[in-house]
Amino acid sequence: MLNSVIEVVKTVAQVEIMPRYLKVARQRKSDGSMFTEADIASQNALVAALVKIADHPVLGEEMPFELQKELWQAGDAGLWCIDPIDGTSNFVNGLPYFAVSVALMRHGRSVLGVVYDPVADEMFYAMEGNGAFLNGIQLPIKEYIPDLCHCMAGVDFKRISSKLAQQLASAPPYSSQRNFGASTLDWCYTAAGRFDVYLHGGQKLWDYAAGSLILQEAGGVLSTLVQDDFWSDDVWQRSVVAARNADLFQAWRAWVMAAK
Image (cartoon, rainbow, N blue to C red; front, top):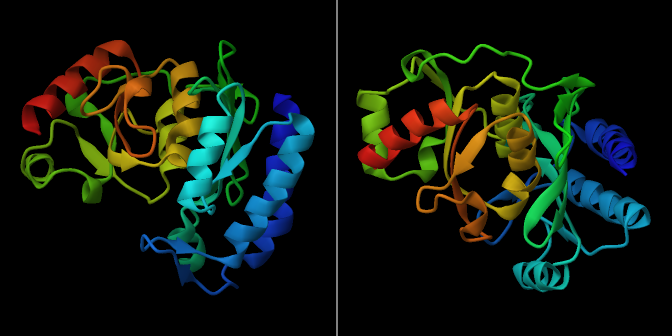
């Protein structure tokens, strides 16, 4: 199954997304987020292909919220969760940091995850209990894990509290910080060791479904800002506190919780 999903994701990126790179007009959804005809074409192609691999409901970012809720309820025994283009603003503006994300979920948890960066041709993937990989190389690709004070952090400032943002800006516990605008890839960069710690104030289901499994299968540890168990928090808006291993996670989460 995993190989079939990887093939579908790569094909959709090559056929529906990259030919439209820098060539599509942007539109705004009711929540203010951006979408393009490439998002819709990618989503339609993924839906058509994934149900042939396993006949489960397919929940996509570009669907109405009421339909998403219905699909979530109907898909407890098996649900495809897709983000046809994560990082649409980057895609429209020519910033080469966007991805296609597909997860298979059962009973509210991800059991398969695939995230593909078509510009870098980097395919991140994992199946529950089988490790995580990047183009066939097991993750993490960077094995050394520094102390928190020497870490590279992935932090999305716009979705965290002003108090926490001020603390991070004025007295960060890490060495350096980046945010590139595509949550699915942020998870994978943490899994690979490009980021050592990760913080996000609120992600949608399709933002975390695949990437969270990839990080876990690479040895990472995660929670939210309000729940120790990441998977027990609100399905539709879930914050992230994560790190590459348990020791670093304890230090990072303790700092974040004290600062927030």
